[in-house]
Image (cartoon, rainbow, N blue to C red; front, side):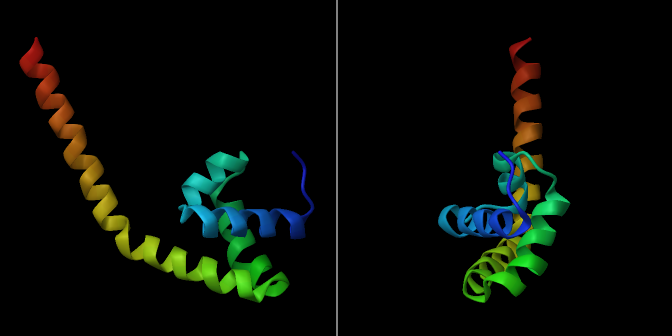
Length: 89
């Protein structure tokens, strides 16, 4: 689906606000790069729709604060799965 810049930034902002999604999740959903999502919701959305930008900025700040926890959990799960796989052999 092709959007103009305003439509895309608004659609991304709505998706992130409604789903409390990360930039990575929004990029996967819309089939675009993470850098494009980030640029749209931080620069273009601020200019085009300040109210939606405020909601999205809050979610992005929370995601940024929690990212080290998500990474740690992903690593923990990886090594638990490796351990279980070795035991099964």
